[in-house]
Each structure stands twice: as C-alpha cells, then as structure tokens.
Length: 220
Image 1 (cartoon, one colour):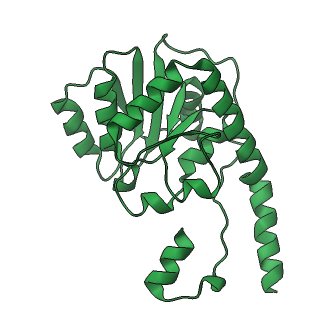
Image 2 (image 1 turned 90 degrees about the vertical axis):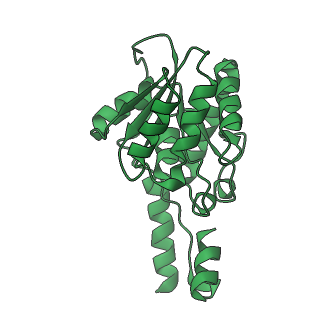
C-alpha cells in the first residue's frame, strides 16, 4: 500500500520499490507466562503517540459503550492529540479508562503481559489504510490477541484468523469486537496463537534481516 501511494504521489515506477515489513524486536517483545493481574477485570491495552492515524477517539468512545461491562481500558503514551483525548474522556465521564504516560520498555512489556487484548490502529485517515504499526507486531510477538482496523495494509500479512478485524473509525464495531473476545475464551486463545505464529514466520528480525540481505544482493 505504501508503494502504491509513493509511486502515484511522486511519479516513481513501482519496480523501484521493495517492500519489507517492520516487525518487532523479539528479544524484547516475547511471550511471558504466569503474570499476575491487578484485578479480575478484562483489560484492553493501547500504547502509542496519540497521532490521528491511531484513532484514540474511537477507542475512548468504544470504552464508553462498554462501561457497564467488567472491562478496563489502559491507554499508554502521550503526544499530539492526548489533551484532546483527555477532554473527550472527561466529557463522557469515563469510569473504566486509565491514562498513563510513556514508560520504559520493561514497564510497557509488563503492562502488555497483564493485558487480555491489545489494540492497533482505528483512525479515519489515509495513512491508517497503509500502515501495519509497530504496536501490532509487538502485541503479536508477545502472543497477545490483537484488535485493529480491517485495512488493505493489514490484509497484506494478516486476516481474521490472526486477529480481530473491525471497521475503521467505528466505536461500535470496536466495542463489539472486544466484547466478542471477552465472551469467547477459545477465540481469544486461537487468535493469540495464530497471530504469534504469523509473526514468527514472517516478521522477526532474523526473517526480515534475511529479506533485506536478499534485496541488497539482488541490487548488487
């Protein structure tokens, strides 16, 4: 999807591009077992930089729709639209959402390990349609069930067998996806397993390093 965009925007032949996925550092992000949760609530985690492509607004509105459920939303990070997100959360009087600032990778990994589900991108932007973000790879590398918008970019590597795919910029669709996973432990386990397997097969540093090496050798 990025190749299509760059080719059209800058009038460059597609043959001059090579695609390689970004992946995640599997020596840092990897499955952690026997993690104790602080409480019994089903925890949904998002971490990011609060830029429009991430669609924080839709996560917050989905949290409001699920306020009567035993679900906790944990939103980690700061950036461009955090104040706007906090204002929206205050206006909605959210009681099931906690906002935390950026933290060290070690702390972040602990929070991801304790989460039941991790979130990807949901923004109503053209960039959302072209991106598979680090956070998706990182969650899958830790064998966490992941929910993200169903986009052409995501479909280049993943499908509904690997993660829960929902409508872009649609709080109700996101809320429905979260609730479906909460109420279906077998599906939760299945997506965690399949997503992790897909990561191991296509997106580790070793795999991507070999791909990059081959690209360089072809050019030489």
